[in-house]
Image (cartoon, rainbow, N blue to C red):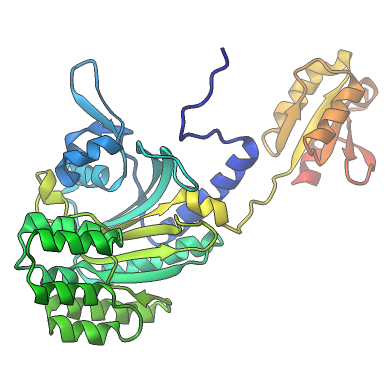
Length: 409
């Protein structure tokens, strides 16, 4: 029986992994330069961590099981909740703000399609402990800089949940979440039907559809006419002023809702062409989640980059590292091992382990793209040398191992 990988998962071969590691390190370098520290949380958590914030409805979308202690466990479907759990459990008394970044795999049981998998990867950032527009602006600017470092140019759209929620203050809280999820899905028909179902006042209905349709330069002015001079609008204006200082191009889009109840203020999404319907590559916003997990009410801001999606469109390419091959004869194989060990301290070095003939070793070195081959022959060894051959020019010279190292570095 031939076994295959589970549906919605992938194998990454060496060439693909080189590119993925290159882009991952680009993102990591940017986050580190901005003063963020890397963290890692468990691959699985108690299932309550996810149902507390999303409800039991999420059970159909996640991988969950009972462990041998009869505990309900879930593979993480996202990384924000585990990070906040870690903060509540271990870091509440730490000086604020806390600035974190992370890169890991997540799991969701959903229909695989282009750019969407059951095992996928997220690169994320969180600032915990600040409710100021400066933290919101920094997070957005950092996201834009990360994507730029990967060679990805996207369209930045920014909204504010607080402005939309102002219109819904007379609506029951349990209905507000449903409304925001329908707004997030851009499901105008479903939203209209639900507002009918709950008998929402006509003036709220009309203002809501106008508000979530506001985009572009006049959006702020029209929003003020709809909701007045509210605190959320003042905060949003302060954020946009800071984004101008960062030199970012953006579009105000009050139809962004993110669909999760714990978002409280600014929300943003970044879209890219070339991904079909799944064109969002980054999304996030400000939220308050710590209190739900037993901690103090703590403002936070963060985002996640869909790593698999940017890998489909990123233009940055890794520099192919130099690789050499050590080739030998039957009577010099042991010496070749010793020489290869010395070379591996300085350059990627391939050594035959198949017992190939001398000419076949050279042919295989050409197959794997070796830039040079180091020939370990008896005559060369007797002279305290090896032969270094440039595979692109065919030129060959006798050198000591130390001279080979100096030449290739």
